[in-house]
Image 1: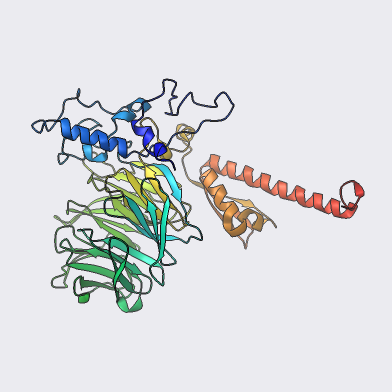
Image 2 (image 1 turned 180 degrees about the horizontal axis):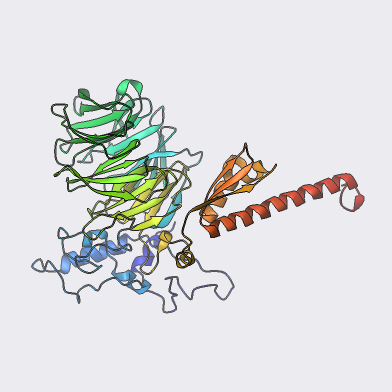
Amino acid sequence: MDQSQVCQPVGSSMNANAGPDGADGPAGPDDDGKAKLKRKCVDYHTPSVLHLSRRTFVPSNRPLLSKMDAPAIHPHSAYIRFMGLPVENAGSGSSTGISSTGYGAAPGPSEVYTTQVCHVTRAKNSSPVMCLSWTPGGRRLLTGNQDGEFTLWDGTHFTFELILSAHTSSFRSMVWSHNNNYLLTGDGGGNIKYWSPSIAPVESLDAHGGNPVHALSFAPSDTKFVSCGDDSTVRVWDFERRTEERVLEGHGWDVKTVAWHPRSSVIASGSKDNLAKLWDPRTGDCLCTLYGHKNTVTKVAWNDNGNWLLTASRDQMIKLYDIRAMRELATLKGHNKEVTSLAWHPLHESCFASGGMDGTLLFWEVGPKGSEEPAARVPFAHDMAIWDMKWHPAGHLLATGSNDRQTKFWARSRPGSSGGADRDPDDDEEGERECLTDEMELGNHVGIVIGRRGATIISMQRATGTKMHVDQVRRVLEIEGTRRQIETVKRRVGALLDRVSNDSEQRQRDAMGGGPGGFGH
């Protein structure tokens, strides 16, 4: 991808003939009859310059600017030149106090919710992406796949840079230290490795009796770290000496997730026994047990304020706890399948993203003006489960890794555009956003619909925005989506089967007649 294509949409002046969607020239085909492509908004360089100029030229004795200094962002593409970085309206902690959504108001979807997919990456001979992490500074993205390989992607051009064999079994977790001097990774064979910032191996140690290491987390001082695995234990390690200090026992089944408090000696863990626990790593005692879920707790995540704890589960629910009062603040219901990933926004403490087993990507606002309903939804972000997601340190990009072997970069939508959050506005008006299921008979053409290595059905899922599954025993195609999407799938599959049947009949006639016109070739 060319650099000008990445930076141009935000900072460039709008064409006088620009259409309402923000593309150059009128919307629709040009003089040659070719449809014009919409420019994607991957905003970093121009908003960074805008932010630096505001921070430099605004007097320090004016923490809150007047409305004449920075106009509010309106839902129109002409206001794209005023979009700064998310740090500008992250609250009173920003350098200028500028809030482009109304000077202190809650951030709007165009500024925080990254619903527009800006690039899709997939390495050659790829395998499912199990975990990922931005490098310090956010210039590159590091992913770990099921084959135990590192893949390095450029964070601006989204181009492939490096692939490196790191583990002998599948990646399960990776985390950077708070001082950004070391990277820890864990695999499915119970091996934990130390890496330098240049991705050079430093040390390796065996943990959890050879069971998979599902999660790793550093202490605030970086002198300790914690791990969890399928041996039902949480283990505290000394980082410098590479030795195990304490084993926290109390879960009755595999421990799937663990997170160290950002500022205190408190560890949160979630297990297959449906429980989330809080631990004191100094004594090994269990401080509290949370009984809010009815199925496996898949993820726990501390907010940077240190007061809120998120827990996600296979019961399709996300729960928010306030550990100061040790009470549940909210139960968030929006996923139709189990929740597989969570990530708090690095700047806006009340915003976070979640991913589901069905590939759905949701954005939430849980602050004073928040809701227990998703603030933004991307229903078919991936074809399969989203195993991990990480925000860029600047808060303007979100990277997701999935079981469909793809890594996707998500950016903020252009002002006035809903991006990927609303695929079919007509469905909203007609009340047809309800997710339905239907079946279609395939007969002897099951293999045709699946395609080589599932290529046909996967491409059709991406084109129609549905979830599809072929039951090879019953020889039927199961479709999940809106009514209009299901009708589109049936029409396309029907046309494919008709074309295959016609080709088969033509070959039979040619074989019986010795070729076209009755003559052999």
